[in-house]
Image 1 (tube, one colour):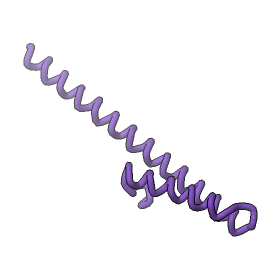
Image 2 (cartoon, rainbow, N blue to C red; image 1 turned 90 degrees about the horizontal axis):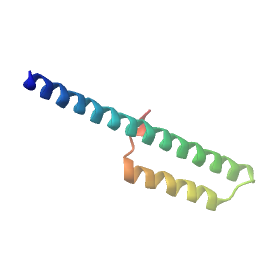
Image 3 (cartoon, helix red, strand yellow; image 1 turned 135 degrees about the horizontal axis):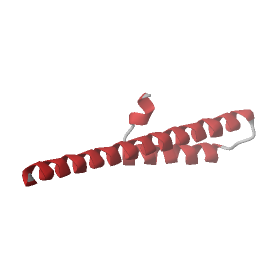
Length: 77
């Protein structure tokens, strides 16, 4: 009986770890998408004459930092 409970506990712990990993992945995806929206908005504002090149550069730097930390999977969707 103890062996069964040990296996069940291990399986539950693996499930929890996988769930946490998926949550972190989704959060990184959402953050990346938000940064891309900000970059697009900054670029649009610059082209319209209401924004600046510095704002675009800051937004681009934020996207690049996110890619360096989390990879570029969010760009593929």
